[in-house]
Image 1 (cartoon, helix red, strand yellow):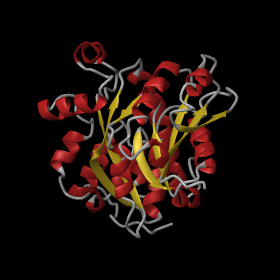
Image 2 (image 1 turned 180 degrees about the vertical axis):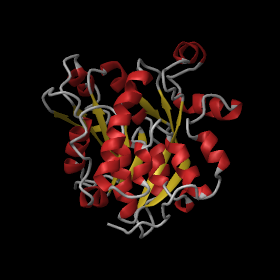
Image 3 (image 1 turned 90 degrees about the vertical axis):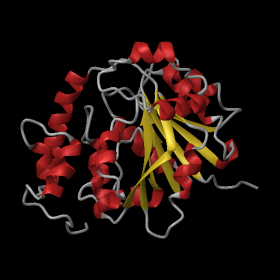
Image 4 (image 1 turned 90 degrees about the horizontal axis):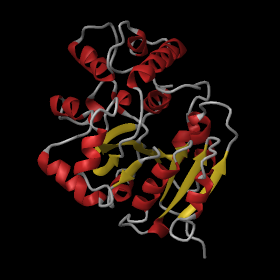
Length: 299
């Protein structure tokens, strides 16, 4: 008898075979057991042996592999493919190269027990904008023991989630924030599969890096999702090459697209120049320094 998994884990990837292996290896250690979840690896046109890496785990995970031709940056389309094929009521979205704590999926699932749909934000250690601490991380941290490393980072207060400073300033529930959707970054989040489909999934007009996740989360917010932070849904962002200067330029363009797409007082803040941080959006609204309401009409 086939039993529907409790959650579907979607991992989009492109030419990151080694990082994918690390993400899948961490999933084999989930304390809910590998029979309790499925993994959907969606390949955006890799040519580096990604399919071979995925095949290594077919007897260790309930994993399915989907491939789309390389037609440029199409992470939105890749995630949508995963959402379309997910069989579980809850979808967990994880970036390739993110290593989940053994209790991460359990923590995500417990937040979806309520009748009202939740948009759960997990906690991500070791995320640098420009990978500036990558070498020190590799030299001092044991990425083969995710749980022990997270325990150490938590104990020492090192390389905490990039959003931690904001969380510390605003320790109340995320649902009390005027724009909790701005903190929903798809490196480690979850939502109900039915709601993801109802709001239309990811906008596939995003064909460069950045903002496709907050575009989705803005629609989840307007559709009634309650945003929740769960530090027990912990993960490590394995250090790998990236260029924040280049990425920030792409993100600025995409944020302008989001601002124009919805044209609401809140989303217009995304287009302010010079670009303000996603944290500042909430603080501007909290301070009442912008003519925007906290409760926009639900779509």
